[in-house]
Length: 198
Length: 206
Figure 1: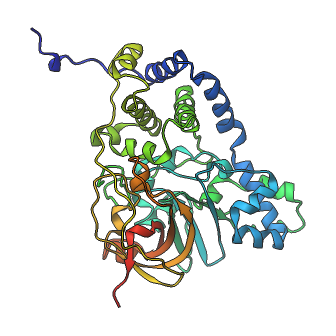
Figure 2: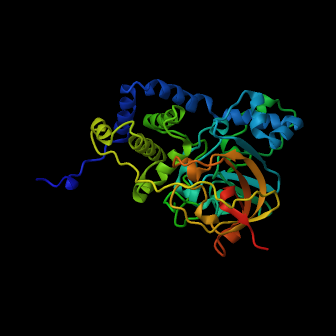
Figure 3: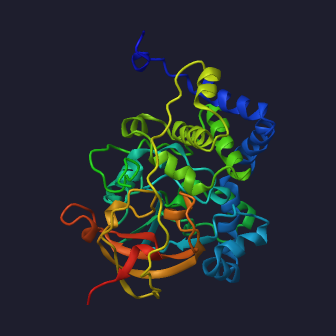
């Protein structure tokens, strides 16, 4: 009798594993392929940083909106018709100033306010960012191209619960009189994560 | 659990592989893996805490070597098998090879019986508590003191919600810690804010 425990099977490729799950769920009538098509579209075309960029631009030009956004982020974004998943019950908007740089992370997994600032970039989910940004934030930011003046205080926000965070970057100089639409075009996902200034 | 996923403050990792406008997805299977787990959550097959816990339960060497979306798919497959939706034999047969899954879960727990409410400005301490199930207390704040900055709406208690245990929803507090106190003599000065569930906290000693 061969020893079953000693039979080593080669691990299936990622494509084969994904296809195995999807086809098995489809065969049970769960319509996974249909659901996946819709969710894939949302993830790539709808939940993009352009949503957050519109919110930031509005906050720059409309002080009353800015006040509402800082007081209750989730309610304020609904003014744009933007939504968050049910389990994200709270959106905290973190305002940068000349003396304060906010930066967000998730050391335990890779949580973000993805419907607003877009799905996280690859580096945000990597072990390097997750392990180091809470402990050596100034060096990590510098390595990423953000060399902050020593007088700037860094505040790191670890997304350990289902409260979601978004950084409100400072409006850059030289943009006086710009329209909201034009301002929205210069707001990047990295600035809303807090690893870049505009 | 003190799992490999608890990355905050671990040393030895190098530079962040940062590029401007980095992509969220690089391959089509990644889009599918992400959508499949989200689909299962939408269908109510499992919740987000169960999903996160099944990632944490991956064998540590598998966790470290896997990409983000491989971890996602491993959690999805593990939960589908554990909940009896699919069998491991079937998915391995369909995949044409081994399909590594996460390890077993420890029992969950309900809210702490002695939890108390806090207000902004209160000085609190994270209980020196080691729980082998799902928890959202990163190891680097265990036993550490900080100041409450704000309170969130009530959320399902992860230590229960990942394990099918009954519990009351409870708020988290944004607690402000100083990096120099989290890692004495071995960190750069910064404020580190963590969303901490009420059950994990106690009033700091005077």
